[in-house]
Amino acid sequence: MIRTGLFDPSEKRDFIGNTMITSEVRFLREVDSACDVFKPLFTDLPFQISKEFHDELVYLKSSTRTAAEAFNFVKIELEFLYDLLYTKTPIQHRHYIVSLALRCFCFFSLLSVLIAFSVLYTENEDSTVDVVVTYMLLLGAVWLESYSFYLHIRSKWMILWRDVREDKMGKLYHRLVQNRLNVIKSEEGIRKMAQHDLLEYCVTVEASQFAQILKFIDPGDLLQKFWYTKWKEVDIELKTFIYNHLNEKRSKFEKGCFKLECLEKILAERGDNVLQEKGFDLDDKDEYWKLKTTDFPRQIFVWHIATSLVYYNDLSKHRRSTLFNPACEISKSLSDYMMYLVLVRPTMLPKGFSDIVNKETYQQTKRKSPKKNMKISMEEFSEALLSLQFNEFSEIGALWDGIKFAKQLQSLVREERWDHEEKWKMISEVWMEMMVYGASRCTWQEHAQQLRHGGELLTHVALIMAHLGLTAQVQRLEKTADQAITMMTSRSIEEPQWIITTRWANLCPIT
Image (cartoon, rainbow, N blue to C red; front, side, top):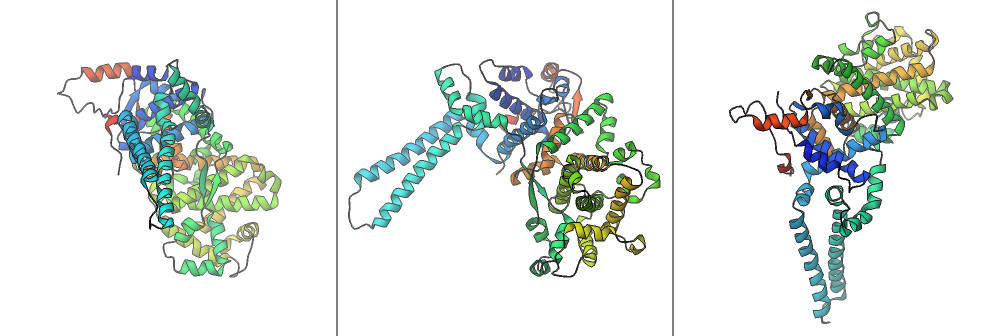
């Protein structure tokens, strides 16, 4: 076991517990401290954190944080990590005196040039256009430097360290950044998530001759992956659903006495446990019910197709109950998001044959879709697919499995006397299990790479899981943080393989 990234907790207690800071600044300092704890994650090496941090969920305890606050917490934490990995911002704030001196030098140099040009310039044969352009460039440079300094003093890094109301300058600075603090604290975390509806894409492309021409010259399916990807608000209902589900998993882990075997079992769940809790005998079911025995990307295809068919079928027949059912909207959102990950971000999920299954599904859907250039609603198309008889399923593929599975899901209402809400609740829980499984299998190096593209919901979920101890990389050290530091400093140099310490403050940004 490698224990890495330990820091002095007493210093952090003083840093966070300073009585001269506001609750908003304390929130930022808690995020910064959590960032220090979890930086070792991005080395993709296992490490231990102290018992007190593990039990307090590293400042993310559900008794003190709502879902919105938790997602905002990890959003800011990922922003700090992005700055650390990809920008020079941490270096500028660490050496703020040198940084301030250089900024002042640049600003006054530009200002001096502007004043000198205004005073010393005399009218001659120079073009008026040249003079105007020169003034515009100089004024623009002065404005950009001023605005850069304004952003610098209102940045999270500056507020984190400088907003201490101990003197007049501190109080003046606090008033300057008060509005910024209120905005930071009131945010609700990640705002958008990508959505890709595979069946809607197939129907839309078949109905458009122009789209078919583009597809002919697009063998890599870039049009499908990016042009037909939509973006949707991550609403508070979805965040609450995710956060509550993860806290339930944390409770299971706690009941298992934080044993690694218990954690591995929890993280290996892909939805089978949900089906078994509902009373299904998976031995009597078809292959697509047995989630653990199916290739994970293909499982997503089958469940996505089934979810879409059931959604559009319910929308056409039970419009009111479908539109006002939160579990239904959550299921559709997670289904479309996981399909987006399979197609556009496949490296974030376990390996599979997603491209092959995607092309196969498109060809199968093409044969069952309406004639070319004929528009049809998704409700009508789903009804047509669900009306196919079982003797027509002579082929094997994700589409056919998805149709059969959708029929069986709908039969729960007709034959098992389920209501639609119970059906959608089960589907949403299975999708959540699949998301947790995907988040636990994605490497942290890949999560770090996605920060360059704005970050994925999967990364936010994975970091919340790390806070809750739901990752095999973070293990619970039975000693307290103070004891760990004492033990670490008392070890002789002859045992370097037992503990590896890292000075994270000396990390350089990736260029």
